Image 1 (cartoon, rainbow, N blue to C red):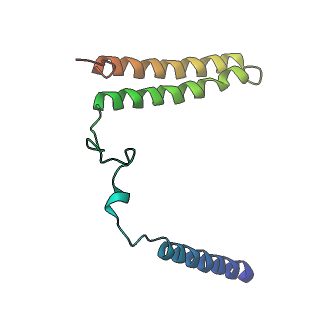
Image 2: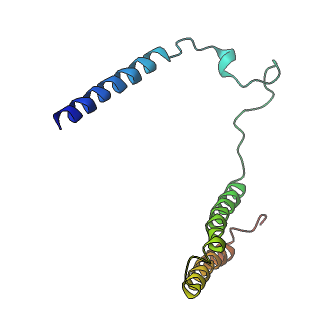
Image 3: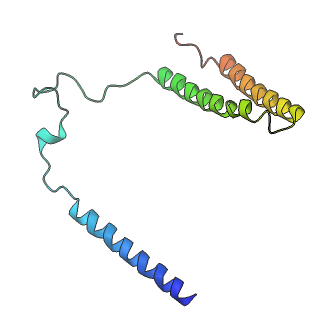
Length: 117
């Protein structure tokens, strides 16, 4: 037990030392205007590099990702049909689809699926 604790302490000390040394050596001390500006074929940029984007597009993308993950959770249902009880499998699948449809209905009624107003 004492050997394990000693080994853990040694590992923590070595890893902390490596992290400290890497943060000290990785610092860039020279801040150059050209290197910190956006690169546009060697010319000065015509516009701002930080253009605002549509919040509506962001919300649609998040909703797409959520439903995409939920579909990937549905795919294993087809492979476990032979390993489980058909009644339990059906109830689980229908319950999950019901939750998906309930979320879709909520997004629709809140107007989050409308691209233009």
